[in-house]
Amino acid sequence: EADIYQTPRYLVIGTGKKITLECSQTMGHDKMYWYQQDPGMELHLIHYSYGVNSTEKGDLSSESTVSRIRTEHFPLTLESARPSHTSQYLCASSEHPENTIYFGEGSWLTVV
Amino acid sequence: QKEVEQNSGPLSVPEGAIASLNCTYSDRVSQSFFWYRQYSGKSPELIMSIYSNGDKEDGRFTAQLNKASQYVSLLIRDSQPSDSATYLCAVTRSGYALNFGKGTSLLVTP
Image (cartoon, rainbow over all chains, first blue to last red; front, side, top):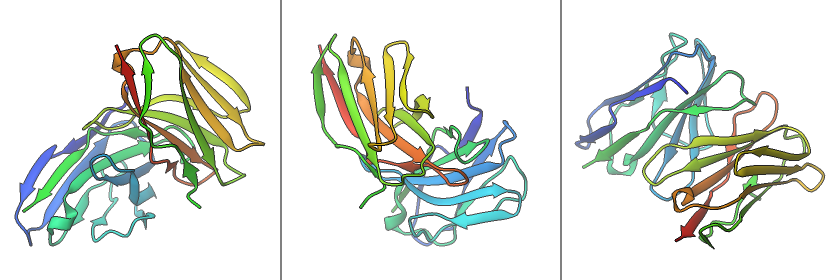
């Protein structure tokens, strides 16, 4: 059973607001990821981290930013939310990049 | 060419039948292969991983890997309505993050 937690699970926010989606894992995994998924659509990797103070952008261009100050914590921030940011954001972690990745329950973001 | 290709479906099978889900990948040096199941509105959950050519069985699920043909499949025996979900194929190679396919929607009809 994976121990990876995301908050908030659901969020409705106004355009222009700053938001941070929290992600924490208790497995000690070095590798952490953020995926974005619209309903019924494919997963897109938007950010990943291979360890503390290491972050990289993924395949899909995103206006969000991430930080990795502690191994267990990988928050995602949108400085100014727009309706186009409405989506599900999935945090994940793995022990090694080529190993199984475990997903959190996701954060559903709606920007109005 | 997308790195991981799956037929989006929907694939419809009657209850009790075998469901066969297929995936092809383009990176010949891929080393690790995974099948995830995703129910509507939920996050993906791992069903199986496979790393070497051949078959790997786990309960009603069998994963098959053919690296020469760059092909991975998932067989679900005795399909149940609760198996109705989207099945995601994921592929990776050393040091790289997983690449996911678009997923195949499976519908098991009673």
